[in-house]
Length: 120
Image (tube, rainbow, N blue to C red; front, side, top):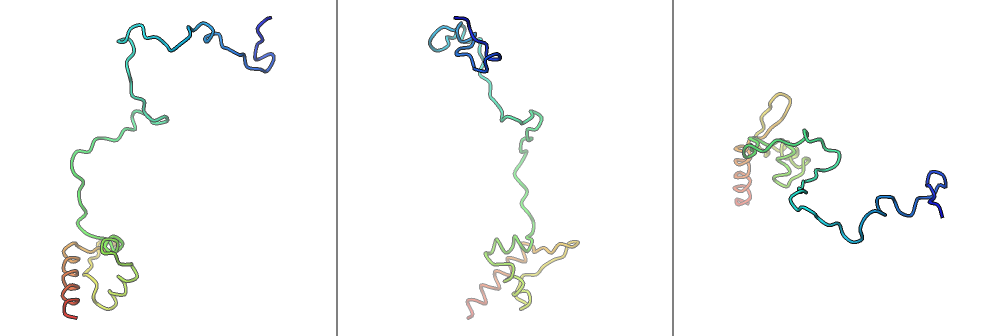
């Protein structure tokens, strides 16, 4: 029986030519030094897209934004603005259009809150 060609019949051949020439069993290594193990990168990433190594510890921020201050002190932004209206919020500084709170101001505010809570 002649071999059927897939492009003529529309069916895949049962075995490819390369498979029929292979010896049964797992592939045998002829020379172990001939094959080198290489790391595979993620597909789609170019080798030039590697991030540069970190050259030192990250620089810590020197102040809070209102959002980060509220997150660090577990209060809502609405509560911050209520405290600001009452006059018990930490001192803020304006840098351009940004409103920032220094770490020192936040420390003074925490100390004032502790004193006020202890006095009550």
